[in-house]
Image (cartoon, rainbow, N blue to C red; front, side, top):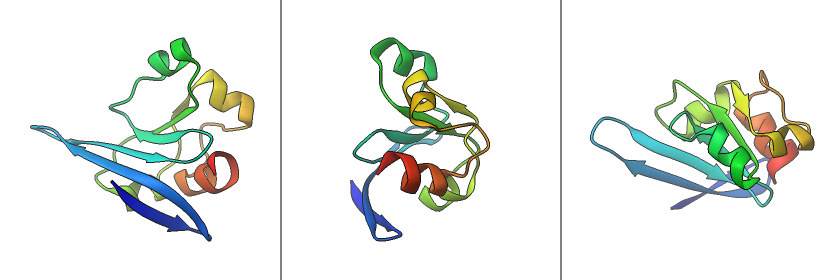
Length: 94
């Protein structure tokens, strides 16, 4: 785990390598921004706040890419597909 600071807010960032890719998650106090390895369906089943970005290789990519999917709990917070990862983290997940 590492700490990432964005606009004076601190987030926990996790990178778990697999044989062919890496599972990437940036966690805020209200939920997570995750790569496509994470399932929105599972987040919905357990009520977690999750916003998904795809086509990412590192945390910087996650901040720049747009959210492509969001759990129901994330949508209830105001997260919408099309928002950048950075906007999602700073405005909704911190």
